[in-house]
Figure 1 (cartoon, helix red, strand yellow):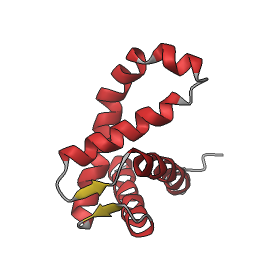
Figure 2 (figure 1 turned 180 degrees about the horizontal axis):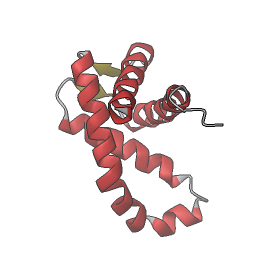
Figure 3 (figure 1 turned 90 degrees about the horizontal axis):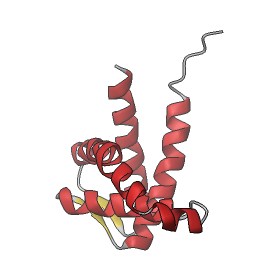
Figure 4 (figure 1 turned 60 degrees about the vertical axis):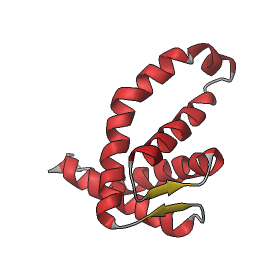
Length: 115
């Protein structure tokens, strides 16, 4: 149940960012749900491989290259999903940062207080 809520909250964040950022567009809420699922799958499968291959660059840049890897994941999702479009790598970078920020806010609402 919590996984479905996380995906729906991620889709809501994608919709919000598509309305705020000028070079990011999403056709519908269903497309945003697909974007959320695809991004989670790409982060699970592709991102670790990219991190391993770019480890020397990541170490030299003190981890800032991970931001570029996140932008590449966003652009890969853009290529895989019809109805989701990101202008270029800079908009993908901004989208990635803001998506991470919104998800952290939304997911903090899901935490259970087990005191």
